[in-house]
Image (tube, rainbow, N blue to C red):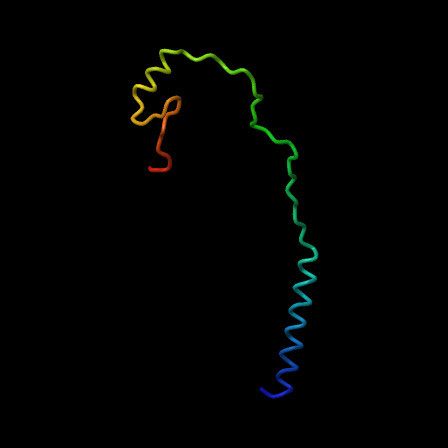
Length: 77
């Protein structure tokens, strides 16, 4: 490519970029408002007293258990 063609291509590229930059100056972008408030947390308390019979049945049905804990699989579906 000779020097005249390079200068012509460079000039056209600059014109295209200048036009594009002027066009995008007019574009308005809406910013999303962020909520500062977190939710979904519960307040800790004494808790409810559970039914002892229900607890016993749950442990009877559990295939694997360790004293006061039920050992369960996770993410196996």
